[in-house]
Image (cartoon, rainbow, N blue to C red; front, side, top):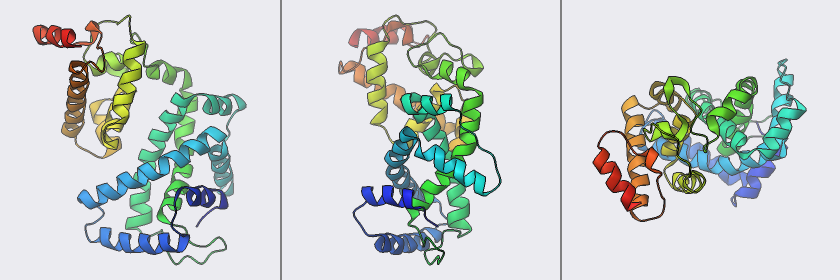
Length: 282
């Protein structure tokens, strides 16, 4: 099933016709089914779906249309979803809030989409309803809009606490488990006075990484534990630690190339001499 608003947004982003997208999607689902919707091919499909949907969902969040669509869908199922004017204004003005909701919404939607649309075959390329069949991307965005309700309610209830956890330049706010924002990620024990430039370049470098690495780092910064991150992304705890470790190396490599200056307080306690060498290189 498709809605005109979502379909128009997808049509504006993709050059192929709806009929071609549906046909290609049907063939792709049959191919992925042979692998049980797992493995490298499925991961490639999942990452492409994430990347294609991201700018559309961001635009809908910013304009408020995503929230309105979610309210309407919930109402159709007899479920109350209320978005206060204050929360709506925050989502329109605060990019960090939108990014937080977008990340969790897509993570939840990917799980639901895999189970319902693919494994249970609820996505039907031959759907004959009044609005016609949708392509996979449109269907996934619809799944994201439904998941928005759960994510938004949690965000709205914990908005004050959420802001404390997500202001990247504030390293003094403790997150669950005793971590301290980015300082926790980089195993720091102190508060760097010069954070603005570091945070800006840090975010640029993070956006250059693979989507799964971005998700691991963003969720870690948000205060989620290794186990929680692994569960949300459906990967092992070892994979979470590996991606954090590799990203930390990426940051230090960028420091050696003088792309970023890591404040001294962000270096690890362990191996202090190595940390000083890295600080010097930065």
